[in-house]
Image (cartoon, rainbow, N blue to C red; front, side, top):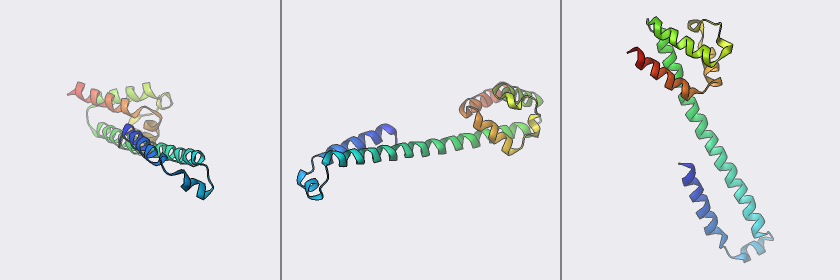
Length: 133
């Protein structure tokens, strides 16, 4: 569900429930405004939690795609594409500047990609593949 759809749902729900009979709140001994302020805060928390979870899943999927592309390049026999990958990684992450790209294990790759803009890396890898074909 998109954020905009979530916002619309929340707005409509709040609008619908705000017209509740005031007697209900009086019988419970609570302030209608305080009640709705608390509920609104909870809804916002849930929305942020949902967005964070969706972003986490998206980022994990992108990370897996990038790792697979890098593994494929490292397993290939094309030295020019391996060199391009090494240049891309060295440019993007100085901490790996003096390391042999082929000797990076899965954990090193994951650490590297987590620190970088994974979407940009994927785009660069695809461009690199297209240039070499």
